Image (cartoon, rainbow, N blue to C red):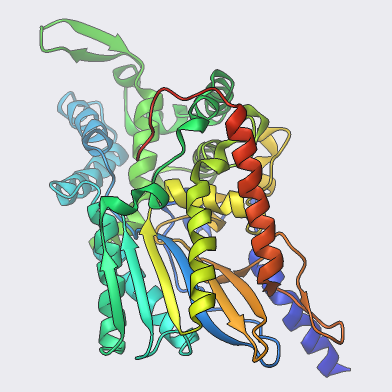
Length: 458
């Protein structure tokens, strides 16, 4: 009896790992890191994988990964909060807490000087760790006889991420054959969004709904009181233009949002030895994350606000997965296609592939966080891995790992001749047909859309 209970619990464990959502009332200092949203730091999942059906051995991996932890992208993200807090300090209207926040943001801004968008040491370590676990988990694929084909976008942080991974592969398996490149030649599938979705992605309805949602969940008043002894400094913030004219505006929302951006990204700079977790209350962290979560859903997922078109924007990436898998299967030798790119491609790809709950389309965006949470989908270093297995008869099964955790795919799980079901294993012929039908559907939809007049590139 005890043995049966243990087996049942072992079967349930993978499902629990995929479905964990932290509610607002359950936030504590130990799970607060999740509410950094898309800037959550990548960690070794430390999980045990389901055993493959008897006779099936891995021989091919197809992968797309986001770059690792990085600095923020734009100068104003650091300099605007720094300038405002410095001016307040000069005028004597910063609280002691405000002065401490200024001190920490000043250190962060100086560290970021000249490094906007750069991969950090933490990001390098993330990709070395992912590569190391690929070798450990799949020695049948990653060995001295393997050919790795690695491609990255031309973004410096992405190239650095790929380099970190390849350095790890080379240190473990110096005789492995690695074909790598970072060329604009591959942009068509790696990081190019189909222009046909432009109008849907930037629709008035989508923008209005997101703005209304953000206004409801952006509450800077408490923090402004904590930072300033006189909050009129920020609610009637005076800015002098180059011509000498003075404008007055309420900068509370903007300051609040930019400090969140810095605080959320502090995990990328753990080597500095401090964070900004205490700047926001748990409720404020949650509300800021809700906005981050909705943004990424609104530019990646299925929803009526965007005519359910947005995930198709990266159909060429799914096409590349399918086509290169067919080539690898035909070749039959151990190999891997490793692609290094961006969250702007990975989020829509996962929605298009319907990995786990990524294909969820809520009727009301207020219900989004009950099922679609970006801290379980894409963050720094996130990746999708499709691992292909085959038996002596040539039958192909696939397992998907999202951030190195077993993930569900949108067809029924494999059953052997005795009817035993294997969660997280899928027959490739069925899965490929499902995905090629999606691509065919997109071709039909696209043919009926107005011809786009502008291009889109990240």
